Length: 389
Image (cartoon, rainbow, N blue to C red; front, side):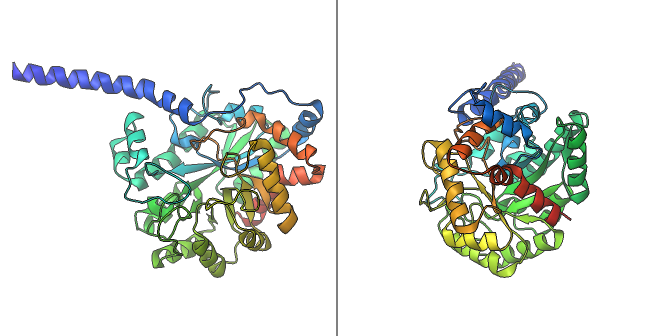
């Protein structure tokens, strides 16, 4: 009798878990990745005509791999998937990996010891048991998941790992604008779990960009939202040196100012800030100082302007362009890129198909056609051609 009772309990719990992983992931995705406006969007003919004339649009930050939606299908939740990239004329998207997020996450001060929201998310999404307690396995899994989506998209998505892949993407798009591409990045070197060899393993999985820290301090050094406010640790320096050897992109988003200074002092390779605001229009610990903007620009780097409240001022579409205008005024146009932070648990003014709305605001604020082309993708194209191995 007892054995039968145990089996019944196990069956009931199994059915409950199946129901949870079937229903809850989409509910959470819809709750955390909202838009202020729902498509289809009302866009002026002038802005739409110019946007559709662009042959290369790129965005430097999207966390879509964190969620359970099938990126090969057009979804009614979230901000990005492959078909919506096609509809949006989006040529290249950075798919960035999140492996840990502290409960109560905020811009000012977070502890690495806080409860981790991503552990719970992996459980309710029905991810492999190996993901439940390993940050490295979470990063590895998301790299592999993107490759699975690429395989399922029947040749219409190109995963960019080197210059040859990127040139292939550019050539394919000359013949078929429905061809889209992406590359892999990760937020926070804590996914390396203190082991430098794990960087090489993730590189083999296709990872080409890494931000040393995310919302809390880790083995590599201080976060802009952490406690220590420190620069690079010895391990952090080892990671940066190895990234330079591999030709990986160093992402300064979320790095403490002292860490940014350390990295600028030890590398002459161009750097990326994949998603950020600027202190010149929104002064908080999340955003980039004028001094660092100028140094990154002089180094040939890219600054991806994020789309969400807190990174930029409200209303957000105007705030995005205000931040771009500030960067232009102190460092020129060649360093500015899009860094939306799509699907990053933030409400966006529009999903990826609403990009022409940004063109309307750029036009309203007096940006020229050449400047808009640079911001929307040509700067990224030039950077990739110059810096991909």
